[in-house]
Length: 133
Image (cartoon, rainbow, N blue to C red):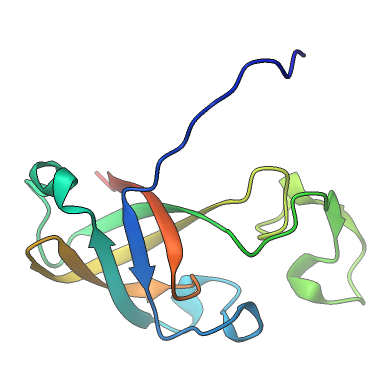
């Protein structure tokens, strides 16, 4: 496969979260039900039409603190579990560190969406939002 093709990914905003670092992040957002904000850039305000409190959305984000050279991990960091390839896990360390989480919209004010179910570190680039319908 040729690596000469370049792909460009632009964040649509940033995630504001109570999680200060990777060590304090839950393995899955549903495990702690943390609340935070998706701060969407104003140029994408029109793309929020149709979103509403109570709705579940998938958020995709760039795991900017992750290792991209990691190919195998012990699931959930548990050394008693056998190694697995990162494609068989939800490890944040992977060749293309794209995170995905199902969250619930609590409120929307302008281009800020308050959600429940985050597992991302504060300052994580938000790359997309998809409706879970």
